[in-house]
Structure formats: structure tokens, C-alpha cells
Image 1: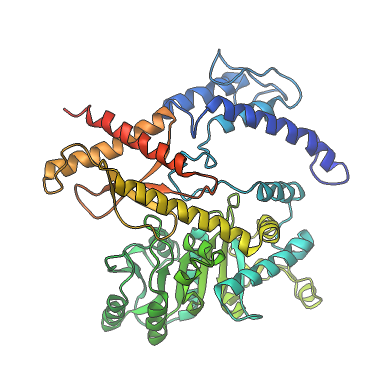
Image 2 (image 1 turned 30 degrees about the horizontal axis):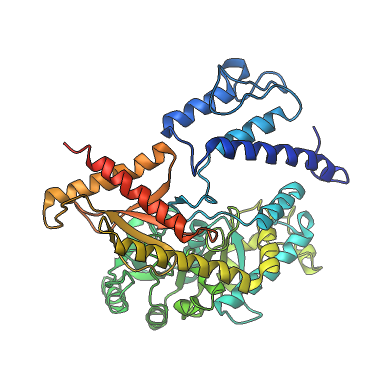
Length: 506
């Protein structure tokens, strides 16, 4: 076994990468669609077949004991030999993945990553720097500072003073924003409350629980007809919290809700937060990608008024997971994260310029996810990424128009970013009939599972409102290579599956 670093590391990797890429191609070819057919049972059977059982299972007793399994299956059998484990499991993973590079895979905020970013991620994995101390990652530490500063500039934070870190995604970014807000509030009488819209991401409640505030510390604010937080309702909620002798730890605005891509009115919310003396955190995990687009950047006017912002470049940034970003308008706001460990960031090292990033993140060991981001930003620039954003936005508008024109489909709302929410309407559907609403929910849920089981398409599912008639389907369009014809075929598959499910009704 060879190691990936050192003088010989590149040569050792080269042969292995060739094997892995060949196996990936074979697995994708065997899949033949956006995901494997057969549903959960079919996938579990194939995984068991490839791994085998007993002594030749996932952790064989002897080195190199690759197994062809108990008999013929979906993937070609691979004999024992050098690289066999890498080859057979790479083929298995490729076959058994939902492939976001397939135009029919459009269910989630799960992008097809750019090849240049994946290649960069390989280098980061091979060299394995850890950003908790300078002496583990000299160049990566410096790169992160540069990338954070550049992204803070896009947000509109003042030059020279902003700070931040690369995170694992929106959840960690939201956790950091609420942690810093909680600690900035300091001790005092009254329960600490977090205000967000009723359409905010579920992780706001989860993070409140993790931080010891309790999930019920979250106060939800009504949204308007466009699913955006109502600033007047927010101001009223601030008044009610204070009247109850509680304190506001944070106001959380959303720039790009998961389902409809709605962007809260950021300037008005920032004004309420300033008047209340409250920390404003903006969850821009989805909508933050609009900063690359001249067309869509105006949607984020007011983002610069936040104390902290979370972005996710493994959405509208086309990065391999994980590539979250957490930014603060003043680096001093990161103070509560400061830690001193003698074996990582002693004071004399810090004073000598060997600056550690340990105090920028709640994590200790942290891989150099910044590297793929740096490579992508340098390779494509803002304009190049903006072109990809605009293409996906155009696809969403095209899909919405096609849905409006199809009598079997119903559009829920005009797309703001790159998501399109809609549903299939069974023949004769009466929206005022409770039984028809229940049937519409059943058919839409079942047609999605039918497409998944057949391996034909990955379409998202969500709910708008409560009670019968709430189930909706969702296209999350993050593949800039998708065409109008691809979208037409995907919608046709939805209608076909809807008809088939309607026919099963008793």
C-alpha cells in the first residue's frame, strides 16, 4: 500500500485514479439513468451481492479478499487482484448513486460539481492539510483568509475588517451565527429568543436546541403572499417578546428558502434588527449564489446589513460537498470561538506570525475545503459562475412556462431562483372537494416514488400549507447543461407516472 503524499505520492495516485475513473464509468453505464432502479430493496440486494457475506464481507479477514458475491447481478463481476477493492466499490457507488449531472435528477439542492473543483478536491485529500494550526496547512491557512475576504466583499461587508471560515454547510453556518449572537447578548434577565420566518430552514430550531436555548425559543413570524417574512409582523413580534420580559438573541432572515427560493426583504428586516439592537443573521445558503449573477444580485440588496451570513457553494457554486461559508462583517465578532491549545496555537507562535485558524471555527480538525473554492473562483471568476447561475435561472423560468401550458400540471408560484414547485392534477380534480384533495396528495406522492423505483427521475417533494391538498412536487435545477428538451422529457415522465398512479385508485 502506498501513501498519497511525498515525492512518490502523485505516481501512486495516478494509477489508482485511472482504476477508479474506469470503474466509475462502468458503474454509470450499468445504471443507465439518474439513479438505480429497483428501489431500496434492489439497491440493498446489489450492495450485498458485491460485498458478499461472512468472511468475505465488508471487512474481510485477509487483505485483498475481494468478493464477486453470490451470483450474477447488475454490475459485472470483478476478480481478485491489485486495486480490486477500489475498482469494485467505485463501480458500486457510481451505479448506486443519484447522479446530479443527469438532467432527470432534479430533486434537491444537490449540484453536479465542476470537474475542476473535483480535481482540486482530490489534491486537498491527497495532501490532507488540517486548518486548525498553521504548521499543518501553511498555504491553505493563507488561502482561506484570501477567499473569505473575497466572498465578504461580494456580500458587501467593509473591506479589511470582515472575517469568517469555511464550514460544512448551512447547518454549521446557522449554528455559528446563532452561537455568536447568543454570546454577544451576554447574561441578563429573561429568556433568549430567536425570531425567524415561518418559512425559515428547520435547522434554526435544531441549532437553538443544540445551543441550549431550546427549540421552543424560536418565534416564527408570518410571511406575505410571496412567502417572504413580513417586516411589520416582525416588528410586532419584537414588541411581544419584549413585553413578555424576554430578550432577542437573534433575528434570522432567509435569502432563498429551500422550496420556493423566496428571499426575505433584507433592508426592511435589517432596519427592524437595528432598531431592536438585535443580531441579524442571514441564511443565504441557497440564495447566496445570486451574488455571482448581475441579473440576480439585486435580490440580495441589504445583505450587507447583517452581522453574519451563511453561504453554501455546494449549491449555486458547483462545488463537491462540503463547501459552506460563514462570514461576519467584523472579524472581532468571532471572539467567543477563541481557544488556546499549547500544542496547536501557543501565544508566542501567534505573535511571531504563525497564525492559527482554530479560533475561527467550532471544529478542530478541518480539511482544506477552501482549496477547491479557490481554484474555482480563479478559473471561472465571478462572471463565469454568474453565467452558470443565469443558465439555471433560465431553466427554472422555462420549466414554469411549460408547467403553466400543461393542463395536467399546476404551478405553485413563479420561480425566484432555480426551484420550481408544482403538482400533477388527476383528471377531474376539484380543489374544493376534500376527497379530491386527498387523492391529489396520494397521486403526487406515489408518482414520485414510482419514478424513483423505476430509476427514471429524481423529483423533489414538499408541502405547501397544512392539511389535504398540500403535497407538491419540486424541480431543483442546478445543472446548467440541462436543455429545454430535457425538461420537457422530465415533465412528460411526471405526467405519465401521474396517469399510471391515478389508474390505481380504487
